[in-house]
Image (cartoon, rainbow, N blue to C red):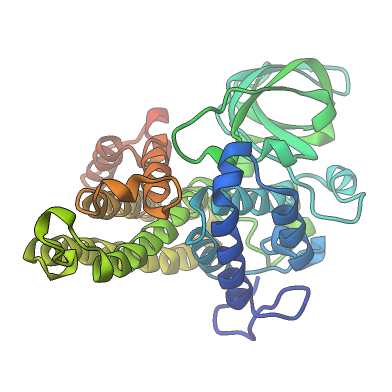
Length: 397
């Protein structure tokens, strides 16, 4: 595991990741409308990410990855998402999932990495299927939502209930052994292509499975294979902050666009007065600035907290994990509020599909709907933990 402050981590082409991400964000912005229409990332986007080594960014060095810290990784995701939150989300999760497969046993990893490249393995996390114990493995059956990045997958990690233990177990299947249901027709985050997958009685070898508790934090076979890596970081807290980060990039990009728009936009019904001269515009912009700056501070603090708490793995205090969950939900809440504030005063023309504000708004509204960012449930969890009450399965902690 690299430490923040070490030598600058670079792409395979030798470019600092921050520079690559800023340039890539411009390309993602130019491709955003088409990616939304396709409900997938364009081949050139995937090729550029792979060429740079982005899908290897989080994976341990001993697995052929770059061993980036989560702080480094999250900053790259934030920068990418200023161009397109939907694209940033897909790229982030495909890289995170390459990190997840490194938790599997050695025999499984030999299959994952047999092609000499990072495996792209979408992982719908809800345990909505079954894994029936059979000789040598598990017979997997079920249907899972939502498989982000499934349009680009080599493998799929499904989470199924183990018939023997009654606990969830991740099962890895080649993409050719699953059925993809084309159901992702959404108002926002369309380019994620987060369709459903169905598996009908496929037998998965035992070594291609991993108990969910080992995937979650601590004691996975991969930790022994890749010592000193980030593999023991708590999965849910980590995933929640990764998924919140595209909202940060979207809000920052929306603020930059809105500010520039207000400098020049004239109101036809106001005698040609520039909208930026109006006090109401000053108020809206100040309100959005406050929320975006607060969002960034909360995100930065959470990013640092993840680096502090992550190495503790399964022994990370429940208070620390709940605090990370609350911070991630607050980030998404502030991003949504800031963009909504700007959209309310940007004028009807800002809703044109050629302008980015409407897409940032739609994308962040869909991110807000993720169960981990349900503000009421998150606040209940935070209050419960603060007062010392026990948590339950519905708390998702």
